[in-house]
Length: 343
Image (cartoon, rainbow, N blue to C red; front, side, top):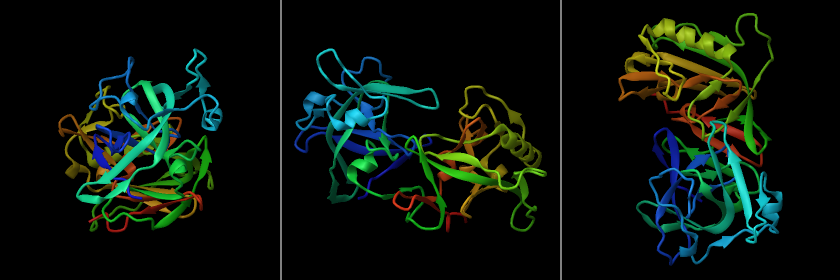
C-alpha cells in the first residue's frame, strides 16, 4: 500500500476521506505519529474542540459508520477505554500526550479512503476502528504497535515514512523494543563536529564525555509526533555550549518558541558547518545537520536549535528529515538510510 503525506509546520500530514464511497465526504488530514496507538479525528458534535482547518467528521452522513460497543473485543482490550453506561453503551477513549495535549470521545469504525495525486487508478480503502474525538483538535494516524493501531488493522509488518526522495527500506538497522506500544532504541553516543570539508575539526564526544561510563546508554523514543530531539540535561548543555562557541552568533530568548528559547540571530547558512552524530546500539549512526539540526523561526530572522533538555530522550521529526526511516515490525528493527541526502 502507498499512503501519501505532506509536510506542514514541522509535521507530516496524511490526506484522506472517511466514509462510504458514494457518500459526499470532505477531505481531512491526520498527523503521522509513530508514538500513538489509536488513530482519531474530530467528530461532530465537537463541543470542546479547537478550531481546525477541516470541518469535523459527521457520523450520520456516512453510510458505513459504525459505533464500537462496550462488548466489542477491541474495546475490552483497548488501553484507557471505558464504557458509557448512560444507555448508548459506546466504548469511550481518552488519550493524553507528552506535550500536555489530550483527546477524548468514543470508538467508531468506518472506511478510510487514500488516493494519490495524479494517479486515478490507485485507491486504498481499509475499514478502520478509530477515535471519534469530541474534545481536541486536528487528528492522528497511529503507527504504533498496539492492536488498535492503523498498522495492526491493515495487517502490515513493514512501513517507511518518506522523508527523502526515492524512499526505501534500506541502510543500517537498529534493534528496537516496545514499551506501551511505542518504539524505543538504545542511544549510546552523541558526537559533535564543526567545519567544512577542508577544515574539519576532530569529532568531540559529548556523550559519553571525558571520563563518562563506557557501555552506558539512553533509552530513546522514536516518534514522529514530536518536533525536536529531547536529550538529558547532562548531554544537552555541553552540546549547546560547543555550538554557542563555534557559531559566534547573538543568542536570543523567546519563551513561547517551541524550543525553550534556544535561538540565534542568523540564517541557516551561518550553521551549515555544524553537525551532530547520534550512535545507536547495533552500529547505526545518524548524522544531523542543516534543517535536521536547526529550524527557522520569527519570519526566518532567527535560527533555533532543534534540541531541548528533558528527562525523557526522544528522536523527533526534525532529526528524521532527509532520512529514509524504515520500520520492520517482524524483525523488530528500524533502518536508517541517509545515502545521497547530503550534497
